[in-house]
Structures are given as structure tokens and as C-alpha cells.
Length: 411
Ligand code: ZN
Ligand code: ZN
Image 1 (cartoon, protein in one colour):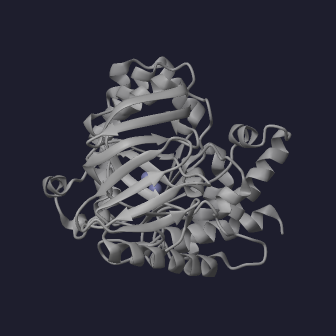
Image 2 (spheres, rainbow, N blue to C red):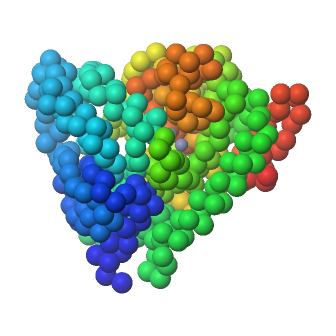
Image 3 (cartoon, rainbow, N blue to C red):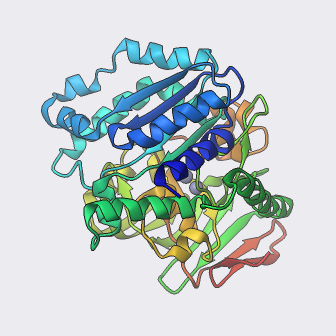
């Protein structure tokens, strides 16, 4: 099957299962000039699904890098009023959002980390209302990936540029359950059902704590918030429209209590933050806060993440994924969280998702904080799952239930 046809199938999946574009709904597509082919296909599929209007917000990572290099901190911190107005307009007209991620590894090497930090902090402060809108599921949104040559060469270093890009497309299609012969939309409906079964079982247990242990040195206990909700697969907007925020997704995740994590976690995959790869790192927590850490490479980048704001030293998400998953079985390290996070159990430093607590999407921030919700402008997932990971759930009465044995779900 020609690649164009596969891209069309993939775009149809992103539009109909990912964002679930509704008749007459405006659609905002965000992506870089590296991902033109997919963006064109997404736009076409969105119109086919009945979109009223498709807005594409293009960016170019090389031009953005030049901005970081040449502009002053003051200029970078200045978020123009029209950018805010435009975002407000999209929210007011009830748009849904499709983001195409295609990070260029190492692109920001050599840029002053403090400059990047200040620029993104200023942007997040001014556009914080948009993040609240998205993370509160006030509209459908989805993230999908598309290759660029630098990324593809990083994943497949021994292949020539074009072959590497082809191989990365193939790996993305497989990870997203898009094959030549199947109907990806139907495959995803079935996949969503499996994920929802795990959510139901865990929601019924309402564990007080989870304990994680493996031979790499992970030995950590995570307290969950009262009335936590395990989610994963499809979600619903506050108006009740189904959507899949991430394609692919294999995870079942919930909200840790901000001050209830104790012990050490050892990462099993690198974490890409601000274009830099933090490798071989561990974190130690006491009462929810990271009190010690180390990394074999990019320790300064890890420090930046931890010092980003008050909440970036606390957890906002804990996610369970069987080691026996399509992405982990492929053995491919994507160097991209959207894919790699679905290979392995992970946790996130930073902001929690309000939907992970009963009634959370209609609570204000103060009410959520009282329940143990962590607020931050950062949200960074890192992997710690392994083939020998044991996960035990501890109920409020102290009863222990084995959830994972040797890396996989057993409940
Ligand atoms: Zn996650
Ligand atoms: Zn996450």
C-alpha cells in the first residue's frame, strides 16, 4: 500500500478517534513544517468528517531555535496580545485541537537553559488558561506523531536518511495499530474497551497506596488521592464527547497524592526535556517531594525541570502499562514520550489531571489542592517499568493485592 494511503488511514484515525471531530466544529491543527504531509491529510480528513473550518498553526523548529538564540530574554518573555486573543477565539468558537509532535533531538543544544526556561514560563503564564481548558477536558484534543529526518536517524542510526524516515513511519503506524489490511478505527474501539476493563477493576479496589519494586533499585510507595479515578484510552469532554487524547495510548493512569510518595525510582528510558536527553537518572522522594537525584547525562536539564516551579518537584500522574505491549515488544526506543511512555510504567513530575479524581473537572484549583492535587506548569513523564517490576496495591485496611507480576498486569 502506498505510504500516502497509510498516512490517510492514520489521519482518519486521528480525526475520528483522536479528536472525534464533530459536524460543524472548527478544528485547530498544530504542527511543524517537517510534518506537511500528515497535516494536509489531517485537514482533508477533518473536512470529510464535517469540520466547519480548519485552522493550521504552522511552526518551524529551526526558526524557533534562531529566536531562542538571537532574541533577548525580554523579547522572548513578551507574549503578544494577539496570540492570547487568537487562543481565546478558538476556545470561544468551541474548536477541537490536533497537535502533531515531531521533535528534533538535540536541536536546542547550546541554547542557554535559563533563556529557554524563562521563555516557556512566560508563555505558559500568559496561556495558562488554554492548558486549563485542555487538561480540564473542556474540548476534544489529541496528539499524534510524524517523523522528521533527524529524529528518524536518531531512532535508526544505521539506516540512510530516507530509509530511516520510512522505518520510523512504519514503526509509528504499527504502534498506532494502523496496518495495510485493518480498519484502525474499529481496532481502536476494541482497544479502548480493554483499557476500560483495567480502569474498572482498579477503580473498584480504590487502593490507598501502590508499591513498586524491581532489581534496578526502584522501591517506592505512592499514595493515591481519595476517590481517585483510573483513566486511559478514551475520555469524555465536559459536554460528553468521546475522544482519545493520545494516539497511541496503552496506559491506565491516576492521580498520586501530592505529599504521599516515599522512596526511590530508577528511570528505564531517557527523558527528553527542552530538546535535551536526560539519561540514566533516578529520583528520591520524601513526603511527595524530590529530595535527591542524579543523572549520568544532562543532570542540569533534570535540575531545570525540578526547579521549573514549586509543583515540578512533586508527582502529578502514575501510569500502569504491561511490559508486554506493542511498543515495548517492538524494542524500538522512539526518543519521544508520546511513544516511549506507552512502552512502560511511568510517572509524571508536575501537574496532575483533574479528571483523575471524582468530580475533579468541575472543581476549582483550591478545591483540587485540598484533595492532594499537584499544580504546576510542567508535566513531564518518565519511564520506570521493567520486565521484573512488581506492583502491589495496598487497600485502606492494609490488605495487599498483586497488580503486576514480572512487569505485567495480573488482575
Ligand atoms: Zn501517562
Ligand atoms: Zn503524562
